[in-house]
Image (cartoon, rainbow over all chains, first blue to last red; front, side, top):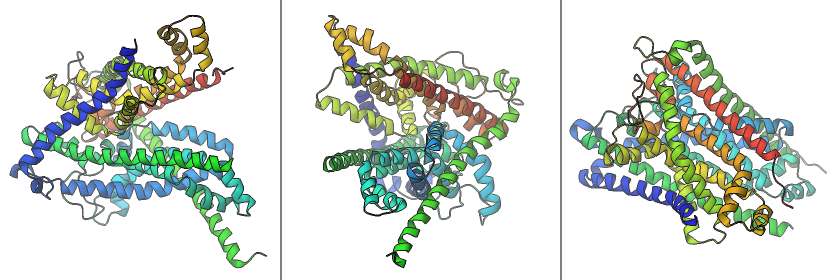
Length: 286
Length: 283
């Protein structure tokens, strides 16, 4: 029986191995074939066999960065408010609600962006009458990552030993000072882990983005301009393209996979850092 | 003595507190608005024809999508549930040393959880659609989803296994049961609630997923699938499929999907609570 269970456990490892192998043997030779200058160039034009994904990398980074600026500032303050500045009875209810919202499908967020955010931006904000683009995608993504961001940051704050807070109060700090100057810095690596997790979510998100980004493979120069992220590039060509262009999509996937692996590694490092810090704190505290 | 500088310091953080409370309000409003608007736009267009009627170009229905979603749930659970639970049993019951293999398995599970769904989609396309020659089919999509939901099942099943007190296992051993017998007749029944909760959460993931399916089941919105090998669509994918040509139907599908997912999550939470209350106490 042990063997059966062992096989089940090793299955995840095998699956991960298969994913890496299949992506790389299908994607990397293609990058070699068309050449690095072509693949990481500016031009994505299938008729001229130019498969440059630079504009998509740039768009992905822009969208993720802007979504993080909006999402983190909102999410972090929200977590702090839930931590100390909110009636305890409400915290439990809000926590449940946020857990519930974390499960909402990304395509629903995309739909929301399509029917609400895009028309709103087009009619009231955009200078050129275009609602699609980086701003719309960032707004949708920032709302989408909020539940994760708030949940994980709140856990990180709750994991900080309580005696820090009491110590700060005893030294004459006000409640607010203790939270912002003592507890928040102490939860630093946990909060960073939450941010990295959300960045991974945002850069890998497809459906919510594809519905509001427009889709032209051009380098973004404005917040209101139809453009295309790495994920959108894969999904848009997925059902139509064949042959070399389809392989180009797989190679795009390899680049995206590489980004997320990088984020995964930094996430585990940060998580490890958080555990060590709290352990050390508890040792010196008691 | 309270100086001006001190007062300013105190005031600064009171302002921060107010900003935090405002942020909490804005976040909640933003998240609730998403749900409310999708429901408001979608619900008026839901009717029997739309839900269960035959598909036509004039009046698209989501019958194919409902069937497709059901297929995907069945395939992915049948594959992922035994492997996931077995994997959790191995991690929780058979290892207490920090062997290299266990560490590797944990890293693999973590990494699988972080891979974007579109990358799973490419993998599913390469393996099931091309290499194994299934073409666009539910079986390919379901198997890809099974790998995707594996981390969800492994993690939460392992947690609920670890929550079963040691003393129960020791008691069972003392009565002469073997390790396997102990696992199947003592540990698993005690953890049953937690495991069912994890499976329901996994179903929620399957229902929500769409990007992975574009590349594996082919987004055929208009034909009710005949069997596991036909191409088709799911509810989540239909929202995207409809969004370009039938915005009203897209919103209605979104509303159905939203209600379904929320119901699944509430069910999981309720079961989790029952589990929490009936928690066994070591001693």
